Image 1 (cartoon, helix red, strand yellow):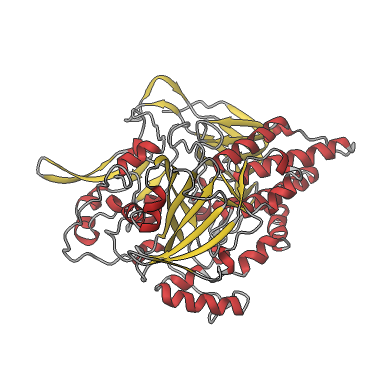
Image 2: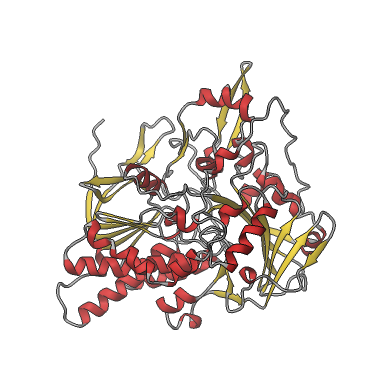
Length: 551
């Protein structure tokens, strides 16, 4: 059927209200204010900046470690320490090696794990605070709206169409049906986070990829309230070793917050060989280590979440400008894969995008040629310095931890070059080995106190979706799932998904894929790790998804 959509026009449309998108909006609004105050022409307005956020409120979908390097924030809000929700400064940086029953603290913490001068923060609270600053400038901030598809024009983009609301699970209009809006803009900024669905489409359609495909990690996290004295505020530890095998890349974190709270998590590179490996079970097993067990004893879980990270770095960074469009933050691979830190880089990318957009609006030229100044600004900033120094880091670990350490050491001595520059990478899902008849492993259950099954954890994520809406997890051919994938890979979607979205069910004596989209925490792992690349994550009805309150 033909859908009549209301059209709205803006100067700038920012898709995603995370650190990158909000920093872009705030910096651009400030630049416009100074420009207008000087009497310069043309006069611009912050009210012509629109920000879309698919979460039910600002911060609801924001999940990170989260250690904040304040470099970009200090530029954006010079007096940030007066009002920003900085939980605690880092007071101790530890690097721990785990065996199954013991731990060893390195006498000297490696430089990548040093966090002096940084803060332990709740990214949820930080983005809420930034959102408040953005709204005060007059920028229009719309929550519960996701970008469903890009509007392509000429050689670039001209805006987005938001998702239709009020469709039932069969795609038919309900009584509350409202078609999505057609939002047109001179410049559209994609700040969707990791594996953004619009960014994925744009990069593929316009052939914007780099020499390496993007590499990803999956971070699984819990926030706990613990007994007094268990963890000092500002204590930061990163763990290596058990239960992550030496042929994989991954490790854990422990961040002490105020109020007897601790953020714990495990991150695993999504390029492991065993398709029946279970990252969620590995995280729960990690918590049974004596160090974690003592720390969490007598405490209670507050929140759960999962998020993917872009590991690929400099050589996986897509071309980040087209006619009428820019890519910022995790969508553009702005993350230091060695330190696993990206908040400051995301914010800085958003600020440089704002400066580029401001110059383009004043000049009345939003072509790719004009917007290419964004790449030049990146190359002249500390983003390039930081990411070039680790440009081959993650690729070093594709064939195991020991070889990775060797290559990483050489890279530190050679300014990031190492033995091979550029070091090539493959898409993570290509690493799977076939199961050759191996039976399915037993599923992790948890004890309900220290360790949990997936559904219990999903409950603690605050995830909520209207169940009577079209499934936002689109599988191109479910017959592959019920036949070929069963025998070749044992249906890895049952294992890599940290939210129990996928299961293989028996119906009338036949195996079929059952999808539970209401459980989805929007981590995009399925879109990344499916061996046949037939799962596509698209935005659900706005407002659905997790609620990472306090994380």
